[in-house]
Length: 622
Image (cartoon, rainbow, N blue to C red; front, side, top):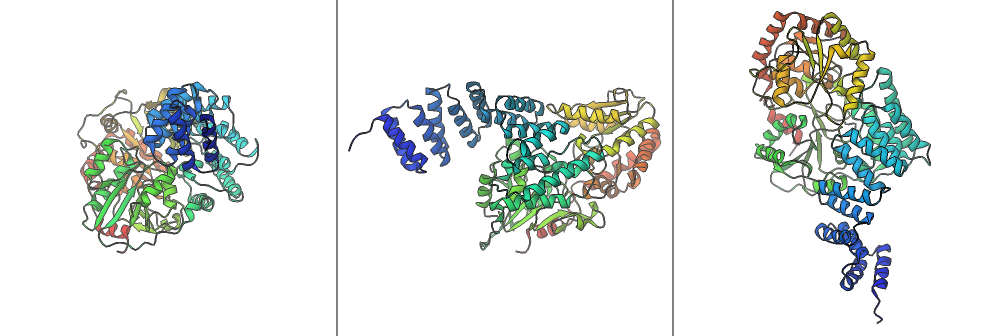
């Protein structure tokens, strides 16, 4: 047999690789490397084969060898970054992508990752700069769509909408994925109600086009990569749009159409998994940990908390302290689905749904015989076929079943066994304002504050001379969102420079101290405070709230009723204004309300009303 020289061996291996025969290719590449240990292309291709087989240690060894031999080859640097990502080494991958972009400034994949990573970290300003540079260097349609998505998240839909529409429907053949992404570009700070209606119509039209396009998806969590999160803050019924969005995804995704598991359950304890990407220092965990603790205490249940692999060590230890086993899964849908399926759960509980795309994709995927959703994001999922949504009549209007796609499971009290925030009402107030100037504090995220509230703020300030209106600004990297909110208030006739302050993000103790020092705490309309309202009440501070038409707009009102103080619940905008003015100007009234809140707030914490009955309904018949 003729002995092939190294180049011939490599070409033969490459032919096998292209034919879809990686085993033969790997053997031939190994022969090449035996003859020439510094053959960088062979190292690179072996790394790709090993990565596909999930032999990541071997893949990393070979790709590092390729980079060492040919450090200026951008594709090797990119390969290193992608394998590091697969191995969960995020920071190292970020550095490898940076190096790849330096080697080849036109390498689109590197710029896409770098911009996406900044966005993931919450630095939207940095992400927008990188996305703009990506478009300037390569300008594929995907780069334009990604840039438009970031611009929309920063609030500039006036720029984002036409840019996204051109990428989807004008600059080449129709792209249904780009069109869906453009439809999902909802403004975080809508300028007025008309822009809200326009944004909803854009999403509706994009769903119509995508449904008629023959769209096919393998991994919607990454391919679409968004959910219509901001719909919930519009003060309207979202059920129809949520159902249509999920119907489009389900029809397009073969993995969503697989039947639910019918494997007979083995004898022994039922396995209940609780999934969320927010099982860390987040409101979702604070709302869920009481239920996890109660389920973990049940001898008939094996409770598994399922965060993603990005969970910090301290958060993992906290979940273990609740009594649950902890089984982190990948942040990538196909792998996460396989990992959860391998847990052989009887019940899969989603702590929240609607804030990010991974949980939504997993909920569609029939990963357990029974799938339940908690109200970590209190709006219907729109997913047909789920087994239950946990709500509570205390939080709902009379006709609430009509707002949900899912069958409902009523909790007697929610949130279950909630832990009181901070050291109670006796910590020191924190204020750097003029003591004679009443402080009206709204701690809700700015995207929760509907434009219909702007006129109420103007009227309250007009009727309380010298008062200051305080908000908490968006985090670093999202300053343009705060600026757009500031501009909207100014357009409503409010003297923002003289009467409004935007507080920076702060520690928990400072946050509680500022709540304690405020003369009036103002709730947001249509999507009220939840965890923030519990914190205010724990601090002994009454809240002026306007009761909404949906669960998400009734949380604070329910809490105030539960402690026997309906006095600050308004049914209209005018009543809300009157209540805020009364509390800001009548110190005796405010002092009395504070005493009553301090006396009654304890009823909201550590409650286990009907816990076992609720858990029985969640896990279903045994």
